[in-house]
Each structure stands twice: as C-alpha cells, then as structure tokens.
Amino acid sequence: MSHVVATIEARMGSSRLPGKVLKEAVGKPMLLLMVERVRRARYIDEVVIATTTNEKDEAIVLFCQENNISYFRGSEENVLERVVEAGRKYKAEVSVLLTGDCPLIDPYVIDQHICAFFSAYPHVDWVANSEVRSYPIGLDLMVLPWMTLAETVNFATIEPFREHVGWYVRRHPERYRRLDIIAPPGLSNPFFRITLDYQEDYERIKAIFEELYPQNPQFTTVDILKYAQQKGWIDS
Image (cartoon, rainbow, N blue to C red; front, side, top):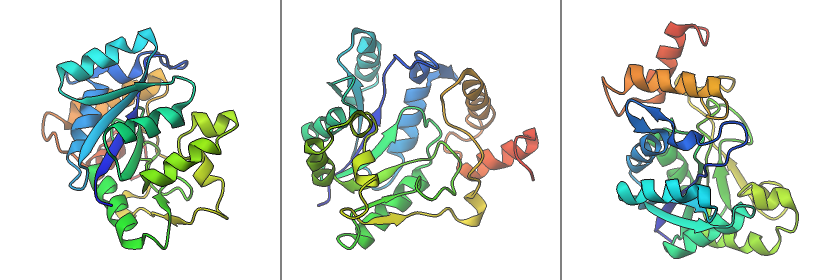
C-alpha cells in the first residue's frame, strides 16, 4: 500500500460563495495555488480534482486541462462516491482527503499526517486533525486506505454520509480506529479561520497570498500566523 492520491473536492456551485475555487489572488486561481501547495508534499504521488458533471463545472475541467492537473467528474450530490471513484481511476491505495475551500493547506501538515498514518497502520484505520481541533481552521485533512473509504459507499445510506466524505468513518469509532494529529505549539491556533466560505474569508486569504507569495511562494503556516499577528487578526 504505497500509491498516495490526494483528492480535492471542488465545484463552482457553492451556495455561500459561488465560484470561490477559481477566485484569484496574485493573478492565479485559488485552486491552482492550492494544487501548488499540495504538490510540494513529499509523500503525495498524485493530486486529483474531484469535480462534478454539472455544466457549471466545465470551468473547472477547462482549468485542469489548461494547467495539466488530473481530474475526475462524478456525482454532485453523492460526494463520497465521486471521491471514491476518483481514487479508483487514479489507482489510489491511500487517500488524502482535501476540500477546495482550504487553499492555504500546508504541505508540512500533509506529510505529517501521511507519515503518522504509515507509522500507525494497521493499528489505526485513519488519521485526521479535525476531531480534536488544534490547527487553524482551513488546514483540515484526513488520511485513510482507499479501500476503507470505498467500502463505506455501501453503508452511506443517509445524506450526511454521502455529502461529507469520510463522515461514515468518523462517526463509527466502534469500527474504525482513529489517530488524532495535534499541532505543535508554533502552529496551534484552533480558532483562527483561513478557510474559504464567505467573501470576508476570500478577502483575508487573498491578502495573505498577496503579502507572502511574492516574497516566497513556499510560505508556511508559521509565516501566515506571523502575518496574522501583524494585522491584529490574532493575539501576538
């Protein structure tokens, strides 16, 4: 079990901020900036955009084709099935679950989770940082075997399990053993929000990219938190 595929759920039809994944900062779409960051993770073998067959998402398909990014189109309503089938197409053995509203995801955090998973498996079934919050909101991810995720398609009989990928695993601890990933002190700030849901989120994330990216495209969460302190968004 070695082929690690990161899937990024992305669509244009967000109810709170339509088209958010293709909104721009530093002259680039947020989704491209996110893919750049995910690709810097050492233990990711492939990054795949999991989008939908909805006509609106032709824009995402075109974006992927223009930027040489792997993609898969599937159900808009059954997101779990879409992500599982994306993994199947790209022969995932280990799935790293990401969403397009986390453009500031940190490759260090991704690698931390993957290493923890391989170190603990098969004594644990999945690792994540969202059950016990310590990282800023917007660095969420989950790592588990693709086969484990695929088997849940058969059990996901209610909407929340289909809409939120990995939710069935997360809500059945009697069946799936969990390892929580806790942020080191320098990265711990569970109330700081850098996820892309609303216009104000976009304005903050855009400001972060435009301040830090020109100086160093590989800026880290530490850099983000230092800038947030300077702006007064968090306490110093």
